[in-house]
Image (cartoon, rainbow, N blue to C red):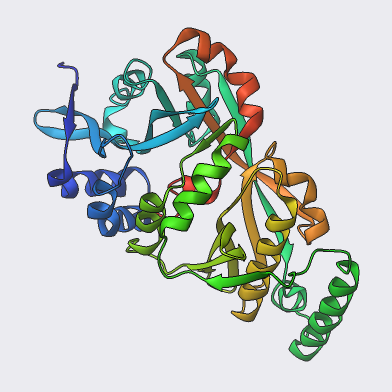
Length: 352
């Protein structure tokens, strides 16, 4: 019996990839990738690198595949090329056809990172040399707890509305010490990411030991050209200087609406700007009808310690974030460097 052969592919193999996605994951996941396909292959990167596919085939049929996206990685004070596989899938009739793909992540390119789908894959990555990892967590802030009680516990709607009103009063009292906008500060809507966002990235990156680049080209591609969801972006200005931004969207479930903080970025340690942006985002999503706000961060990220004071009262682990360095010496440093990751939902493929 012949072994599946490894190959790389471009955007002309969409139908084959989407069919495989449907068999391995779900029809909903496959539909998202189909709509986002051309957008994924247009991802900009400072190095000029472009998205491509890597897979295995047998008798001309695709039996395993993933898409590999380029990201500019800021690590230890310099920009480096990194590659991020998404949607790694193998036809269940050809188990083992994905192993050559996974092995290739460890001998191609200076850095490979990703989010393993389960513990089994995470353990495989470790066996193949992955040393750096940190847990991503979702942090939850209630916005309309009365509505949540009505939905979950059958609380009558009028009582739920009254509860929400009391909650808002109590929340405002508890956050009286939180920062408010100064005379020279303002928060605006963002319709295009321009030069000020490049300036913010150029200035802020030196405060981070490890994160993914957030230049204007990337932000416009990620949020304004995205074909699947509409995002709201708020920017905090001090005079003419951009202090940070936050990106949100609504997630409509069958019986509820969640507010997602998809991305938020300021200079590292700028807790004032971070708090102002996060409160503005929550206020916006509450007006839009969201029951709760969900922010995803590595559990070691610098803003985590301030989240409870901003109303994020509980959290739960989501998945591991892993990174491998081709350089042996750098790979040995990954366990300590991963304690300094700054990574948000926007940096993963959860939206697409």
